[in-house]
Amino acid sequence: MKIDNNTLKKIAHLARLEFDEAGAEKMTKDMTQILDWVEKLNEVDTEGVEPITTMSSEVNVLREDKVGEHLSHDKGLQNAPQKDSDYFRVPKVME
Image (cartoon, rainbow, N blue to C red):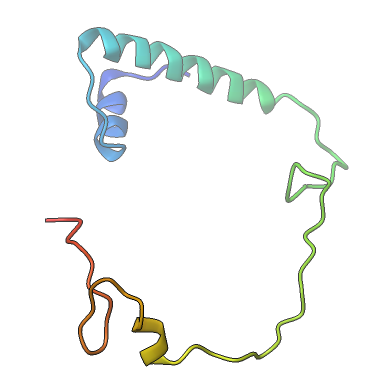
């Protein structure tokens, strides 16, 4: 499968990518190679192969949920560097 310029521009817009003409040529070539590789996977016989949900053989060890003592609102705000009556005050991150 070959990626054309219109498809590349659409993907770049959706992914918020910007690149020059040389970058566009390299990206087109790389994406075409990726799609060719994925198409080769369609040739593999997967009949009778069970799907897996993880690549790791490790098992999650989960603890039982237990209700415990909760921190009161006032105690939670006690050591806050900046606070008002109900909330932590933090510097603005986004404009």
